[in-house]
Length: 249
Ligand SMILES: NC(=O)c1ccc[n+]([C@@H]2O[C@H](COP(=O)([O-])OP(=O)(O)OC[C@H]3O[C@@H](n4cnc5c(N)ncnc54)[C@H](OP(=O)(O)O)[C@@H]3O)[C@@H](O)[C@H]2O)c1
Image 1 (cartoon, rainbow, N blue to C red):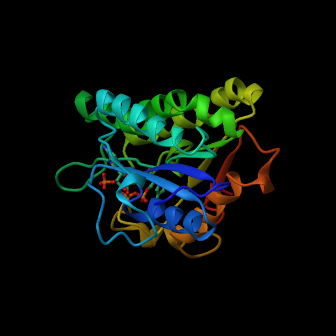
Image 2 (tube, rainbow, N blue to C red):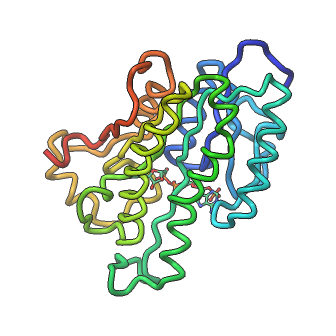
């Protein structure tokens, strides 16, 4: 896609499905360039206006792969003035037992725990630090996607997942303190039960007790991410917005 002066750029992980998919559509509709990152190659039948130069194939579970992706993203940003207006760390994994059951703190294999932390926690650090210069140049915004499971034990989400999201929420505060003096805002959003493939059978029982009595939609989550990357939230930093229909009240 040709360079368009004044166009804002977002780097988004996990754009291929669910919340990420809705997010790329929301930002594209507002005229942003969205550089997507996932394990798949660029889809020729891409459902939003983008070319292969706006997609990076990356496996976030491999720290070396993240390092080379950062170099590649910086190279591509350089061609549009070296500015990055937003980084959304959305990709996440939530492994279960082979039977689909919750993995608790007694049973989670250590290699699974490490993989979960690499994708859900270390990759966001590597991306934010690696793209710091470009974020500062644009006085940009970072949004980390945490989870309702990060603050209370969840019946389906496993221990490794929950602790990685709690760590990501804490990292959001730390980064807000460290990046703020450079003009970069850092926030998190913590979705509750959102209608995506990550949900487990049995979620309908939880929904009965959610004050709003329904699942959230990916579009509703994308709208909040968009708010946190826009000037409408220009004094919001270090916060974690809960998008859960009142589930924990
Ligand atoms: N859905 C919910 O109710 C809910 C609730 C709380 C929090 N969240 C959080 O919201 C975020 C998005 O959730 P979702 O439900 O939309 O998830 P999803 O439908 O399972 O999609 C996950 C995305 O992450 C990408 N991904 C996974 N592993 C990756 C890896 N190793 N390298 C690169 N990309 C990887 C996937 O892309 P590829 O497979 O194409 O690589 C996919 O685009 C996650 O962080 C999740 O923890 C969701």
